[in-house]
Length: 337
Image 1 (cartoon, rainbow, N blue to C red):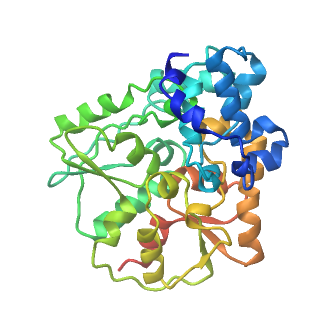
Image 2 (image 1 turned 120 degrees about the vertical axis):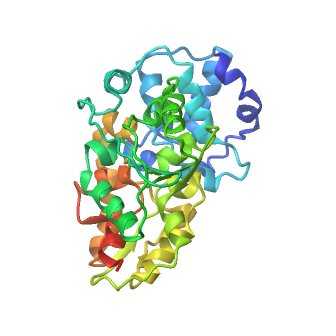
Image 3 (image 1 turned 60 degrees about the horizontal axis):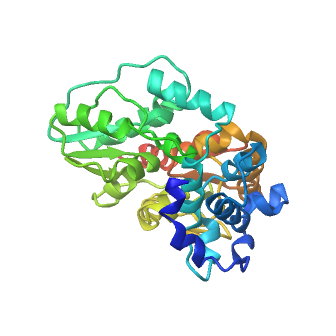
């Protein structure tokens, strides 16, 4: 348990009060103690001390969490529960079949879907690159097209390199992630200093990579002087767990939607927003639970007669199987003159 040893202090600070269980979606759906943040922290502590030995039930319990961080908003001791769970995964020896396939696909083909690599490199002007991410490249090309259309309308022609997954699924499932250096090398060879992406997971994974800065596309667009025409219909903005709780980007998407005619908030929003279950590793291994989490989000929007707007391709890909959803980049493309 060499990785958990580094988090021994954080583990010891947990008082076991159970406040993290108040709004845990996986606990509401799964119903057992190990479906909660507290339960998983206790499992991690047991693995560290040797009081618990790894078996299939332990592996599944530690992986059956989207690492959304909602539980941490209720923790009075500010325990980094998601970090503890993710660290415990690094010490596991067994790998779930869905995770093994996804990891193999990333390492063999450069994307988590097992698709044949798609050449995407193109020259551009200046020192800005656009990184679409594996979801938009292989699963939701309409988002990539919308993003490039928006940038074109702003008279920007960013460089694009042949894309490979940033490796965020590897990190989330507890595997070593060697993808960022590979991607950084491609960007460096193209002479890039700034990378724009609509994928929050890519921002989270690449933001510490030296030699260039990474900015989420909504933050970039919010800094521009955009002329937007209102979009018809009722929109409800859903905060992505990665863009919101992990990156702290709450205002830029709202600013853009306000300029595009306004929007409604979910009952629980910003730091308290529900997770849709769209994390790739979580969804692949636990599709039923991930699907129920998506339905919880979509049900509230249906009650309002609204279209859900997200700023995360992972969420868009997952939610569109359960109702009407738009990515904010699609909204911007429709509204930008």
